[in-house]
Length: 273
Ligand SMILES: [Zn+2]
View 1: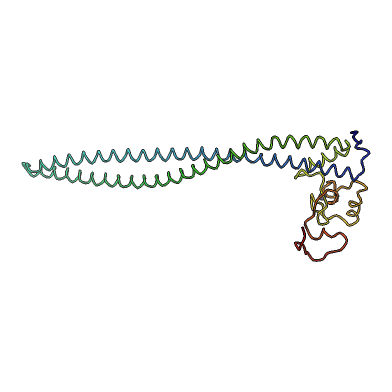
View 2: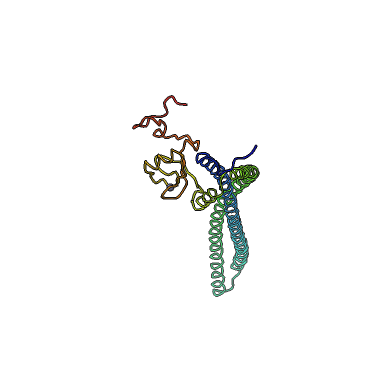
């Protein structure tokens, strides 16, 4: 089939082709955006997991330290108790007051030592309990993040597999459509699209406004757009404007539906479709 020279196409056809190209390119943008965020989310989760693992290790280390301290103090208590036993036996055989005084002082000292060690052990046990709570909280969080990352990775993998093919098809379609658009028009369309934040180079009229920047379009200009006799751009953002009907877009808003009658009140959703 001989292809028509794009220059010979009517404005109507040119606009239609452009709008189709726009839809195709937007679909590609969407796929890229969809995939574009996932790797970032996965990386964020990886960082978070690494952070949690470090914290957990630190807490475990602290618990270990406290347990060592407790063991040490228990050893000290054993020693003090052995001394006490010895001193108490010696007390039975004291020869003079001086010896007696020395021994009672020692006994007093070792008794205090035992008390002090017990207090330290209690304190360390409290700290351990606190750390164990902290540990449990962090481990729970870690497990949660592991689950999340697994899901994200699977999602990403799926999208990668899915979008790769779809994107290829869309690119092919876009390439095909580009051959139906004259070079000059295609070039300006691409320029507009590049400059636009949402990647839209051609937009349809929406509620009497430009569908790209939402500035109002004067009635005469709207009429010109509906005529499809020449290519009209938005005077604010420079995007090419197309009549929604030509774009094949169904306007949902009630105000746009009945073209003949003016509707002042919104009354949709009644017995349509
Ligand atoms: Zn605009």
